[in-house]
Length: 396
Image (cartoon, rainbow, N blue to C red; front, side, top):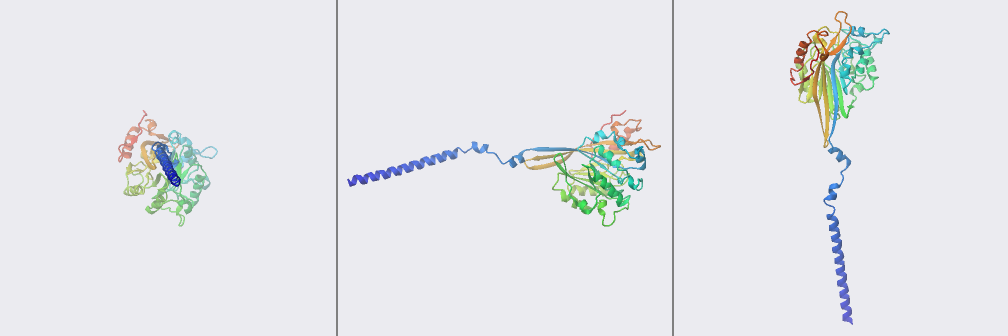
C-alpha cells in the first residue's frame, strides 16, 4: 500500500509538471503570435505626430511687389493740385498708373520731400515742404511701403519731420522707414507679413545737403553707415524671410553707377539683403543681381517738374517673392523681375496738367520720338542685366 501511494504521488507530481510546462508553452506561443501580429501592418499605419506631418508637407507662399522712384514735389505740382476750397488733390496725376500699382501686394515709392503739411507753409526747391495730400494720392494708388530717408528730409527742420511722421503714423497698413520720432522708435524691431511671407524694411541716405539732424536726434534721418546697417539687418535677418533696403545714394543726373554705390551694394548683399532699391540720381540707372540680391541702382523720378526727358523718365520694377517650406526647410527667392519705363507729362510753358504715363501708353503726341527714348533708357537699365524682362511699346 505504501508503495502504491508513493507511486501515485510521483505520478501526480509529473502530471503537475507537465501541465505547468504545457501552460508555459501555450503562453509563450500566444506571446509570440501577439508579437508577430504587430508587424509590419500595424507599424505602417501608426500615425506620426501632427508636427512631423506638417514639416513634411510642401507649402508655397507668394507675394507680388512693385517699386517706383521719387515723389519730388516742386511748387508747380502742388499749385496744379490745388482745389477751389484750398485743399490739394494729386490723385488725377497718378490715374494712369494706379491700375498697375494698386494690384500688387506690396507697392514701394520714395517720398523725396517731407510731408510737413500746409500749416507749416509749403515750399519748393531748394528746401521743400509738401502737402500731406501727396501721401493720400499714393495710398489711393496702392502704395504701402514708403522710404523717408533722403537728402531733403531735414529741409524744414525737426518740426516738419515730426509733422510728416504724425501723418504717416495715422495711416493703417503703411510701412515707412528712414525717419523716426526717437532712438527707441528707430531701434524698434519691425517685422511685417504679407501672404505668409515675413519681411523687414529699412531706409538710409548717404546725402544730407549739409542739413544733418540736431545732435542727439540723429533718428530724424537715417544717415547710412556700414555699422548702422549691419546692426539693423542682423537684428532681424533670422526672423524674416525677406530684407529690403532703400538706399539714397549715387550721383545726381548720372546714368552710371558710382564706386560707392557698388561698394555699399556688395556689402548689403553680404549681410543677406534680398532687395536694394536705389534713389537720388533722379534718372534711371542699371539693375543687376549681386549673388541672390536684386539691386536697382536708381528708379529715377516717379513724378516731378524737372526739365528734361531724362529727368522725367522713371523706372517701375516688379518682382515675385516666393517662399517654399518643404520638409522643414524654407527657401525664399526674388524672381521674375520686370521693368517698365514711366514718363511725367505736363504743359512745359505753364507747368500744369501733370500726369504720369507708362511708356507703353505713350504716343508721339504725348512725347515726340518716344520710341528712341525708350530704347535709350532700356539700354541703360539692362546694361548689367541683358535678360531683364521689359514692357513692350504698344503706342503709335
